[in-house]
Length: 227
Ligand code: NI
Image 1: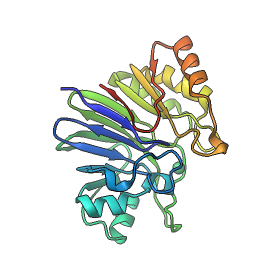
Image 2 (image 1 turned 180 degrees about the vertical axis):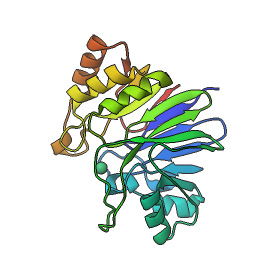
Image 3 (image 1 turned 90 degrees about the horizontal axis):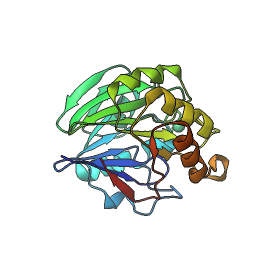
Image 4 (image 1 turned 180 degrees about the horizontal axis):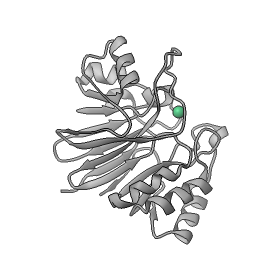
C-alpha cells in the first residue's frame, strides 16, 4: 500500500496512508512558507520533534479540534498536557512504540528543545517511522552526527533532512548525512523560511545526486510525493 508524503513548508510534514493521517511538527501560523492553515488539516496523530515554536507550531489548536493523539518526548508531552492537550503519548530517545498507523522510534538529534514559554523541553528528537512497510526518517532539527550511520541498516525509503544551516545542518553536512544513512530519497527541509536559512535546493540536489545514489526531491509547500 502506498503512502503519501506532503511538505507543508519549513519542516512541517504529513504522512497519509489509506487509513491514517500523521502530521509532524505542524507549523502553519506565522510560517512564511505555509499555503494552508491549521484549520485545513485533519490528522489522527501529531508528532512533535522538540519544543521550539517553529515545530510545536499549531499542535495544541489542531489536537483540540481533531482529537488527534500527540506523540512527543516526555518533557514536551507533559508541557502539552499542562497547556490543555488531552490526548498525549510520551516517549523518549531510543524508544519505539507501535501505534495504529505504524511504528515510531525516537532518534538522536543534536539541538535545543526549550518550549515557547521557556519551559524545559528535554532532548530534541527525530523520528524513524515505519508505515505500511515504508520507512521514513524525519531528522528534526539536528547537526550532522555519526550516530546516523545506525540508520543505514533500516533501508530508509525517505529521509527528511534540514539543510538550512545556522540552526541545523547545512547542505554540505546534509550530503554527509545521506552518505551515512543511504536513503532511497531525500526531501530537504528547514530552509528558505527566513533569510538566515536561505539555501538553493537545486544546488543541494545537484550535490546529492553527484555524490550519492539517493534521489533528491525538493518540494514547494503543498508539494507531495508517493512512497
Ligand atoms: Ni529547533
